[in-house]
Amino acid sequence: MAEYGTGPVVARVGELAPGQTKKFVLRCHEGEEECFVVNRRGRLCAYVNRCCHVPMTLDWIDNQFLTEDKRYIQCATHGACYLPETGECIGGPPLGKFLTPVPLIINDHEVIALCPRCSASIERCGSKRKYRSLESLSCRA
Image (cartoon, rainbow, N blue to C red; front, side, top):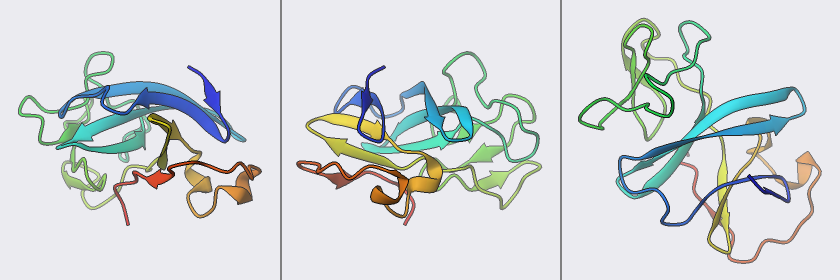
């Protein structure tokens, strides 16, 4: 996976169809985080791959995060269900808690992940790179 400015290129625009997910590793100052991106009705959202209840990975089988109907992100360990758009747990032990969002940006048809603590400002994390066609893809306001 190529590094681009402040983070890795995790996908290309249009690569993931609605209801598809893709895992990636994000290297931040604290080390490596396994993360995933999900296409929810044409909108990309990304989260750290860690349940809010017990710090375990969420995927049932490698890279399978969604319920059968593809409406929710589901933890393989305890069955907790999270809204893909916000990461909020709506059922299961961590009810009301949120997955850790991973900010995404798009540049020249590449989807780039940023370290979670970089969400307030790209420049604060050490990059002053100018992005052409910069568009925020984050699902949380």
